Image (cartoon, rainbow, N blue to C red; front, top):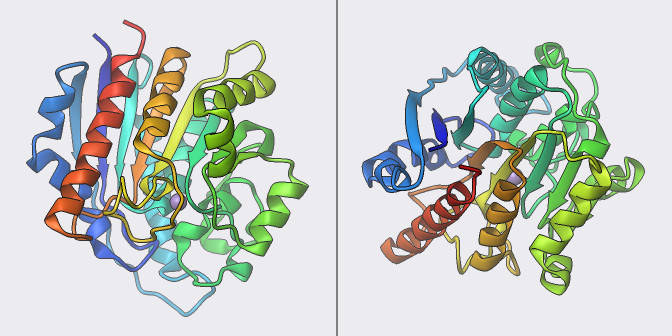
Length: 297
Ligand SMILES: [Mn+2]
């Protein structure tokens, strides 16, 4: 049986809803790990902790805190032995993915990142409409964020041809420009519904990595999903991916035999009614079970 390492990353300084930090504890509390253990072995590495640093006013809200937090996430992941195990990073907001992906790139610079999201998360700080870091991690990973002393530790950059964006439907002008100029592989929700998740993903992976040798990382922002199927998140955008899209994605990635790691981010158990929470939780559980069930034995 495959083994999954569960790393709780209650990092919330990339946006203003503190509830995202409760996701890992909440999932444990309702017995998600026991549920997953029906199909994989799970090793719970516990939750990391983050401290608020003293901050000055800059173009990034909580700049020192997010920079130090992400550096800590990166170094924590670099120290993990992931030779045989799949890493599940349970966030937290999407800002943490600068840390997780930076750590994974140091292990293998060929890693392909499948970024599933309603947004681009690619705003350079100077172009960010909010200053919230969870809209910027890809700008830093792609080395498009400009110079920021607090982020001078970011050395492992993601090559644009190693990135696949799935599901974006709310892109800022600077993000649209970067996607175009860097020639990033990108499929909107409408395209996914027209051609099918599995077909598009297969084709994208084949184009990027024809020999099929690079490890795959999934960075899954639950706001990629339609608000009907995933209401418990902070930045809802209508016309999103449905439950079936996500199941196909998980199955397809797992079946490659190269899925090595997942970020699960922006789940907020404090958003929505009790029913909303139940629906969202079911969506997460079904997705993880489907994915883990299709990992090679
Ligand atoms: Mn995101």
